[in-house]
Length: 220
Image (tube, rainbow, N blue to C red; front, side):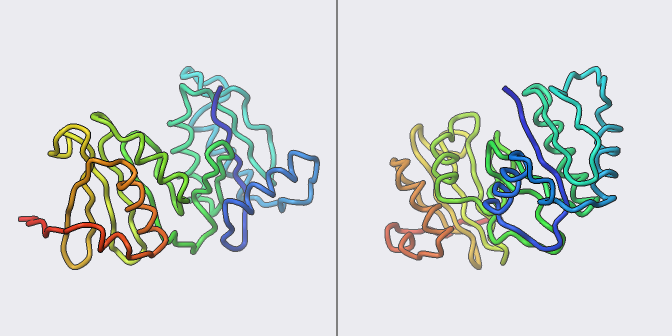
C-alpha cells in the first residue's frame, strides 16, 4: 500500500475526470498525452532535493524516473502526507497540476483556476471541488477526534459540520452551520441529515434552509 501521484503541465484548467483519462492513456502506452516541458523536469529535481533517492525517512516505494512530460511519484504510507503536501506546493511553484488517482483528487489545477468549493476536514487532505460521494464519506467519518468539516465557497461563504463534545455538543450529535452575513447554527442527531446539508449546499439547493430552525451565533 502507498500513495501514487502524477504531475504534469496543462495550459488550461481541467477536471479530475479529464486527469484520470490522461493518466489512463499514459499507463496504456500513449506517450503523446503529456507535452514536453522544462517545468516538469524542474519539479522532479526540486522534489528529489526535498526527498533524496536514499532519503533516511524512507518515503519512496520507487524514485520518480527522469521525465520532462510527467513525474510519477510512488511513496510509502509512512511518507504519504509529507510527499503529497510537498508535491502540491512544488507543483504550484512550477505551474503544474498534481493528480492522485486513488482519491481522484486534482490539486492544484492549472494556473488561474479557482475551485468553486473546497472541503477541509480534520484528518484528511484539503479537497478542491469535492463531489457528493466524498462529502458523504467525510461527514460519516467525523468522530470525537476528527470532529469538523468545512465546505468553503469561492465567494467567501461556507457551511460546516461539527461532531460531539469537541464541537460543544452532546455525544452522537452534529452541529450544522452556515455563514452568510453572519453565522447561523442548528443541530441534528441524524448523520444522514448532516450529509444531506453538505450535499444540498454543494448543489446550490436551498432545501436545507427550510428543514431546520437556524439560530444566529454571536461571534464576539
